[in-house]
Image (cartoon, rainbow over all chains, first blue to last red; front, side):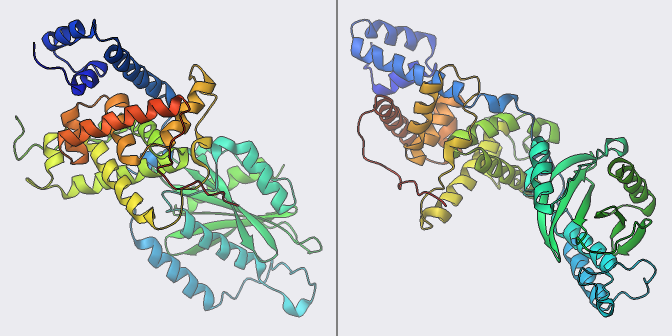
Length: 258
Length: 186
């Protein structure tokens, strides 16, 4: 019989001994209660370890981990963000029909708030939609909490529309700063990894907002439909065709306008 | 050894996805924080995709000799060690820690579970890693040695120290703290 070492005890605890060596070690341990207890305790440690984080094995794999296996997202988003800022700085004139007014009520400070709102929505889309690790602050798993939180911060009851009819699932949402208060961004994603964001803002309390039709705005790859409905303004942004984006916008409108 | 130079791990999306739950479990116990764990897993998957795309014969010894699962753990180990190095000078670990791990899960005895989690947090990272690779993930000592790139004797000595330390901690024996004190984050 060869010498016993501590390594043999580890190997016994870990089930790493061949049958012959195992028999030798077991035989030796009969007269070595202390060593026997050690090996048993180590085996129990292994069992306890396996019991610890077992729930991780049953949880569905989060989308962001699946997304990590996709080919890297293109770099154009950075360029698109720059282009967006540039084009907006040049000024977007020509949209007089449905300008909505800032809370000040001073008609000389009419801001083309709707258009600027759409621009903000697209900027926010361009910034967060490519985000792999932290696309949202609160995930869809906590949808109730998410909606309550954003509603509270915007000072009005929000809804997270369901866009599954068009193949998009809620990823989650985040809170963003806006001109006249907080804004909410809900993010959706389909199985192809395409993302759209719904950007929501509460109208200033004394503003003279009127409901508007869908307006379309496009900047580089990102487009948005935006509209006002009651006391909220919405913009749905995405790198989708106009037709697809419109369908989604109609779906949103039909759910939260009523 | 049956691997040849052309033996790139058989790595398609589905076979990697199948390993994600175990990577997540391991990372949770390693980092003590479910969110940090998923960050680590995500980094691991992204790195794995890049390394695989750039793979060349003779390029990565661990990749040639290990199965896909072990190789993914190797990638995770390297990222984890790099993160620790990066954090070494930047204060203590954040206070969230194991609080994020689901205590209501199917562990049999919540008290024991908490004690165990607390004890694991007090193990030095190099010992904890060997303990998890061997005791939780069931890697052989030789695989663990390749995986973390140390001699097999080092694996055995770390394993031995980890097990003794864990036993002491579980008995509530007073021990010196091997890690920085947890800092309370406001």
